[in-house]
Length: 120
Length: 111
Image (tube, rainbow over all chains, first blue to last red; front, side, top):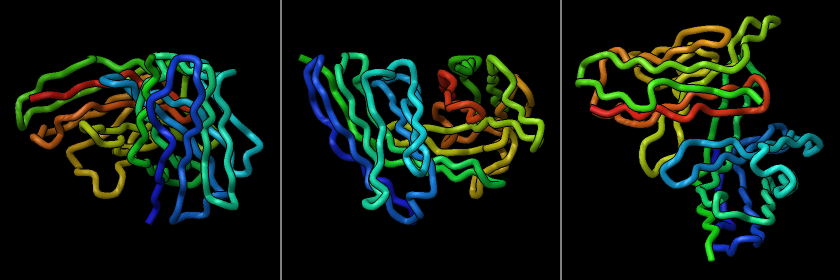
């Protein structure tokens, strides 16, 4: 059974930093790209960042580019998102997402999400 | 970046009636070499992560009721709920995975 467990959320002041983690199990973590998707309170889904299976390719939404770094530790099946210079508009639930469309079908799994609140 | 635009933003439908949600992409998300549209539909209920309903524009995921169907190609897509049930009240998102990933703004379906 695939499981994704996020941690690291919390309350942080504007301009501060936070590092989110997502521990994965139930699949060969190093073989698949992973993403972070966020959802501001009462708002829609926003894809934030993605990383290839080996960690050599990364992608960012414009809203976080230059302020966030996605990385992974395949030996620990863990995905990270380092967020710096946080703003009020970064307040959201952050979901870890395993989404794979490389085969004939699509694989899609989500964690339960972790809340990040940016406020003074 | 590919922008996904859904319409309407919200929709009130009587139980047993049809619900139709439209999604338009700012550029084609059809990939000729494999003849596939890189478009998915999600359902999200309060307090839950999104649930994948349909991938490749029209392929229903395992366990998804057949009252849900997807259609369209290129830049215009539709999600249809043929006979709305109470448990279908949710927000629905279209999602392109052709180039990076982006979501539509969501459509709230109510009774």
